[in-house]
Image (cartoon, rainbow, N blue to C red; front, side):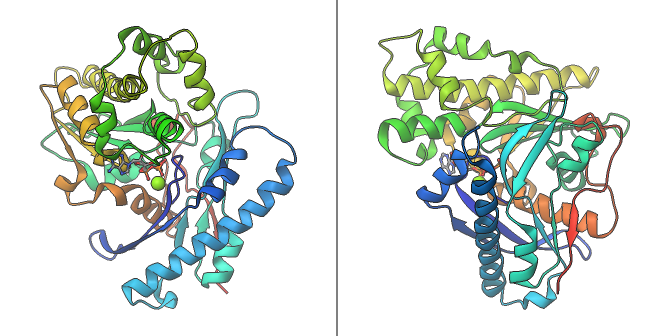
Length: 366
Ligand SMILES: Nc1ncnc2c1ncn2[C@@H]1O[C@H](COP(=O)(O)OP(=O)(O)OP(=O)(O)O)[C@@H](O)[C@H]1O
Ligand SMILES: [Mg+2]
């Protein structure tokens, strides 16, 4: 797994015999140079076919190294791994328009060849072909592992973008899930631009500033945020240009106040979406909120989400027995398990597709 933050390649070794059990995890950093190569393909530019073909192969090799490192760490022979689920790196996600498409690269042929392990990849495009958004795909996994008979829960993944999953305690309420808007992507961009840091550790810089209400209002006016689900988004919309365009109407705001206002944008768009979930539950409301993804480590962001939702318990998926950092990668191991067993991986109630589908392509081991 490597998400829209483009921070690292994350791998988990998961057993599905009996309950879902995480055996080991491993992560490889993405160098600044490689991140720039990926970013340069996230928006239209020259010579894209050649550049994406080469990057596809380069990422295939990097993902393979990550899997081999994971197996070594776990002391498990690659021959004992049934399959790899490889999300790939998204370089374009345009789920609306006349010919909607989404593109994740990290050549699965290379991964199968180098690791000798059957590889499942290209999870999103079948859902798009069935009329869906192709995203988010993690809600089905959230339902499989986090649903409770006693409480209404929302799982929030704060990656580059943020997405929520509503898991009603009642069987009859379908799972709802969508991208709420930016997660860490704008926070990472602003601190990198101003302080040359990769991210705002624990949200310390944001918490040192003050929210600028007119700027926040301006950011919250983004039409995507008002759209009803199903919906999904990416760096095509929420990127440096988007932020800088909004900033042009403002002057005299300190850099720390801007960081604080961006954090508030993430917190409020997540909290507002969770409040909207309450209305889907009839007389009930969401009881518990569990955060996962890298943003779960941002103490300030978590605190703001809790402050905005005083009647709900806001914690992380650690409370449910799964490390926040590992949820997304575990979801794609689970999706590969579903595909290998010819089981549906997507939820039409989430993506808006014509139906649930078995996702991805299978690249057999030697
Ligand atoms: N200690 C921390 N404090 C604040 N933010 C953190 C911390 N650790 C990680 N992060 C944030 O988490 C991000 C990485 O999160 P994650 O890997 O879940 O995102 P992702 O790769 O975009 O995943 P996806 O798009 O699949 O959800 C980093 O870019 C950073 O912004
Ligand atoms: Mg990541």
